[in-house]
Image (cartoon, rainbow, N blue to C red; front, side, top):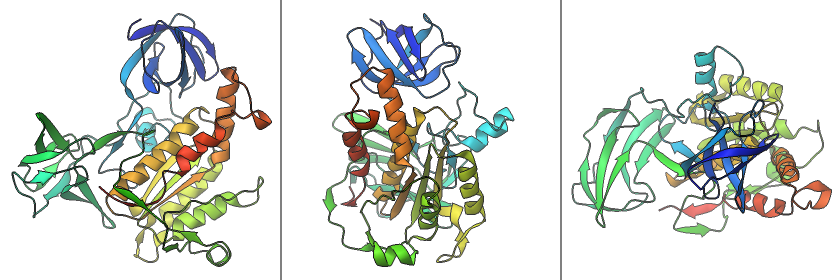
Length: 378
């Protein structure tokens, strides 16, 4: 077995490959157009891959190449005000690049612009030789008038500060600090890369003790929410769930808003984006987009990407949480994610649970919901 295998079978968004040496949840590139996929099961010499792009035209025998890395998010200056798909591809940049309103398969655009320079201001109380650990703030970038982006030491780095860049303009790829620790040398850049399925670490979790003011009197009075809590709005089609979620995102007392459209209709996402672009934050007197991140994975996009969209959203939320911000993350809707899991599970010929959903549905949803909470950051 090697890092390159061949397609054995194609069934919709599920591709089975053989003779491929990979680990669970590793990113692979499928076919001649290098479609992005993720390993979701390994059974003997067969590797089951859910592909996050349209698989039309894939044939048996085409190559599958392992990347050696997990599906990850780029976290750094440039997130605020962006509109991504479920793979963190900026949809506006893709539209400009291709001249189309649709995302063509196989296209690759970096999540954070590499040619944009940000003014980095180093932390004044930090000096050469000081001990730093995961989460230590080494500097600041004024991303928008509402968001001061704190540049932190990544969770996998610690040691003594060997060098820090002077105040000035830098791209996200530039090194702004060097940390020496345990015989290893870490280069700290303006951005971090983090696997979306792995929760970002924290010191401890706290009990919810402060109300989250949503700005909707019916909810605040009848169904109060807590900061660090989780809530769901159940209901049938056309009952107003999406409208309620959009209003909570707009008016809640939070510092950062992450809105994930997971399998929602395209016209609803379009309406939400249009309204957000025009909306002012009444408490701060600035445009709402100056503290918001959008992930738009509409119903006409590949169903497998619905799962990545919610995990991408919560990873971005955790990143800003680690800076000390109050983050509200809204996913509309997790039921469409569950429908996507049902489709993938059926194509994998797994034993179905209630109503055809996979038996692991509850644990997969719990993994997502339990990443919310009040925490003591690193």
